Image 1 (cartoon, rainbow, N blue to C red):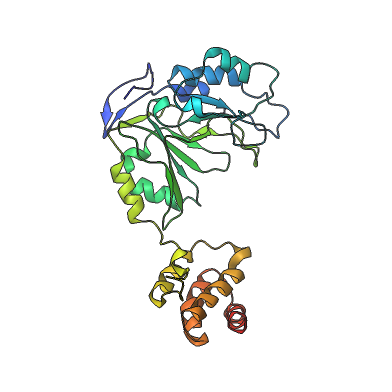
Image 2 (image 1 turned 90 degrees about the vertical axis):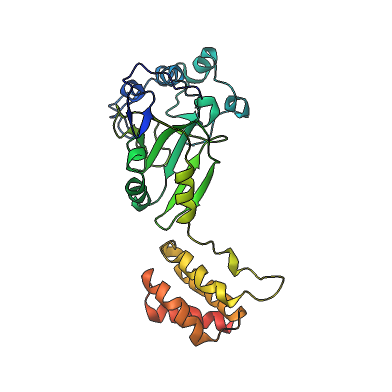
Length: 300
């Protein structure tokens, strides 16, 4: 595994330290898109700084998180040239964001994306306090991205844990990086600690096992089995899977759908209510309202 370049200090604390200083000169704390008194960051300078650290960068389409390229497949296997950086980020382009490419091309960079209310990030920090000390981004939504360098890359993918979604971003992924501006909030991506090390680890199998062990059961078992009715025994798992994941605007529709599945599985209305009402209560739905949705499902 090639190391991300650094003139920072070495040493070990649980994991090897990689490039320690990138955040110190690519972070711009105070610019926001809504503040005309602040000048946007020099993204060409920033892109060159990332490149010097061994991190491949991409131009991002204005008002988006997507690369402003017809295809960025080639940049998953090679670093952009300086001429390309100038073409992408030179004067006159008006960009306010850049992306970093995860995986092998960036020295086996892995980014853990915590995309919930913060509970999933706290759970991870409790389980892996050493890894939590690695270089961390605060996104324009106030969420966290932990950067790591793994000798053996894990597979990319999202895990919906009991606390919230956590995504592993490795080969085939890119993400916004400081000092990008979030396209929806207008707030910048910043480093939680600009001098935090980029930790180097042999692998992330322990993290993958932890994620899989805490992944919420999917709701798909409610689908008919072999063309017949859903199996009764799977319904409690499906309700549990939704217990902490239903948005306010979708609660009645979810109750209705679950009640329909209960009916298809042969449960009567009282049995469906006994199964669904406790979950509806956790979502904040009044019993009378939930009962009406269940009754409506049984009349359908």
